[in-house]
Amino acid sequence: MSKKKIVILYGAPGAGKDTQSAQIAAKFNLFSLSSSKLIEEKIFNPALQADLIIEREKQLFEAGKLCTPSWVTEIINEKVAQLSVEERGIIFSGSPRTMYEAENEIPKWEELYGKENINVLEIKIKPETSIFRNSHRRMCADCRFPIIYSAETEKITTCPKCGGPLVYRGSLDEEETIKVRLKEYEERTLPILNYLSERGYEIMKIDGEPLPPEVTKEIFQKLDPLMK
Image (cartoon, rainbow, N blue to C red):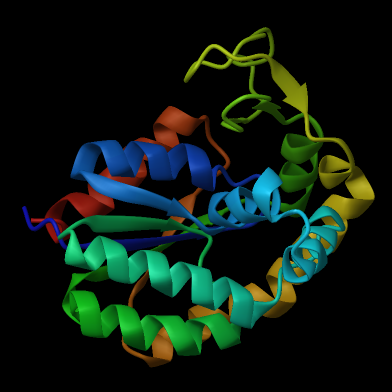
């Protein structure tokens, strides 16, 4: 199995992208690169709080809006170039998120990894599922690992990854903010799937309504023959 593979995973807020990207990363030995986590590492870094650009991006993020595409593109391509040199494969969770990012990231990734080594999946969920899952979602206060709501996770009080306390994400997961995020996804992210299709990529559709293990099973069934 080649190390230098890229998997791009799409899905509306609450689709379970972070949960599934962790599973994909483990199975196929890929670096899990979440644009949201990369952004959070920057905007919540205490050493960068005096930076005016960081302050601007933090305000956008906390309002449920997408961060500035040129800034996001810069920090993502910088990371991809580093991973390419290290001969690491990558799983992208929700990135690229705008047409600007796609047009300025995908060609670069193709150059570094080869178009034939890039695969795209979309986890499909209903809007009402997105609102319910996000409004019930918690995260680890220490490592920020997300906990998607389910009957299995409802009674969990500590992070299964590091043991830290679980907290709600506040305004980011209020219903009105979630609706803003869904609108942003529909208007600015879904057109990227058309762009990728026109560029020759097959978008593999995944049913995101079942419990996470079932979603993982479907993803593996579709990726297995492509990751060798």
